[in-house]
Image 1 (tube, rainbow, N blue to C red):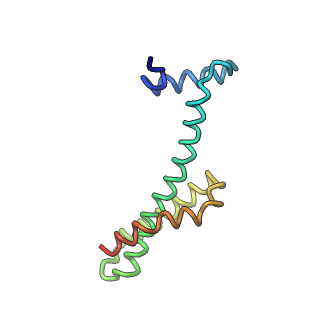
Image 2: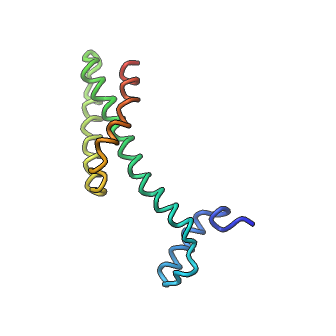
Image 3: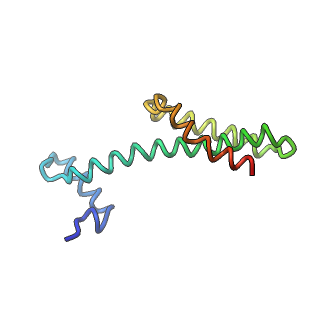
Length: 115
């Protein structure tokens, strides 16, 4: 039999929030709640990696394709730098993982810039 989590995620999430709010902790779907909280954390990491990929791609293109330098590219670089700074401000613990995140983010921009 499918659970509320499997049938209607939004409904399940609202039910879990109501259970937490009312202190009915014994009724919480602990297994799925743990899974979703972990997914939220991974989502923030993926978001930071994605922003770095775009930034690195544009930085590489700026550096190695000077004939294609344009104001829009410069603005994208500035925008991505600010977005990364805001994301790190909101999630300061991600700073401890920056080296790994940058290493993960670097491979695809190299290919994009080379293309």
